[in-house]
Length: 343
Image (cartoon, rainbow, N blue to C red; front, side):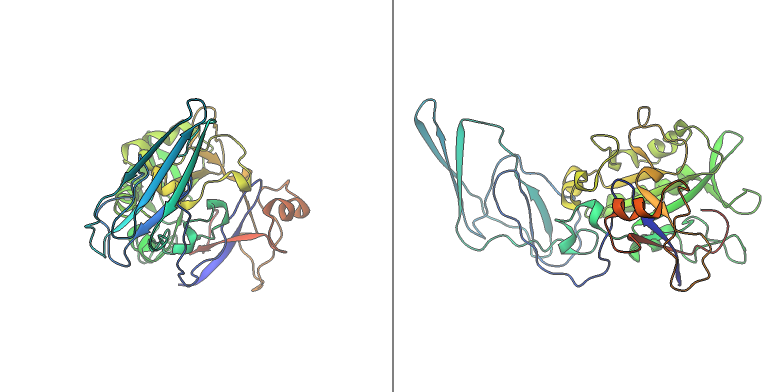
């Protein structure tokens, strides 16, 4: 399959760097407030990541002692918690330590034995776990639902499950309303109707549930400029809503975005954008595309791909470069199957 139509992620944040690099072992410290990823190498997991409520240690990899001194009472409490690890090597776990908000305590952590090494991939790569969502390159399936043989309006050769299994982590869809129901259609439902938005997102939600260490992005094309509330029932009814990321504020900057490991531990692993008619005061989890993303021309004939801005039209090239923080062309998301029609 050919890759075409670059979309530049920009505005105040975006993002995405380094796709398909060789996996390396990454490790975090065991200090409070720092997420620690541990686990055996290889194998599928049947359960999702968990966040530890108290500091723990495994006798299989060493023990951890914690000494807490209370300056107000001058008393010292020492406690040691240990347990035996019985997890098979092919079962992966991802754990986190809670931060402390106390101002009158000091905490000392010592670890005997090897430092935990993360071998659990986040979006297929171990090294992505400690990167922010705003620093990960994603391959996007343009018009992801439009898979239909012998139809000129089709864009993809394989369905959404195959797309995700093959490494696609951003899905672009185009929504239309017919008789009160939201369908996914290419330009017109008379040309290619891929079914309801609810049915499509139900399949996506099923994949997300089975892949607890993956973070994906969905971009909704609101072709009819309908209110954002038009699309919330499909997100809720499909079972996707519990996984959807809600930012803590509007206009997130590059540095404001969480790491993939943080999104995985909190199970907010689906980021949703829409091109027109968003309203974060009403629906805070559907983000305005052009506050975060800018696009290059839709149908380039130059094989070098021009870096000029097509959408949003009022964004200068200089501003796009500054906001993206990248090189001459900013930061890229590659779309597969961008063969025709509007985005």
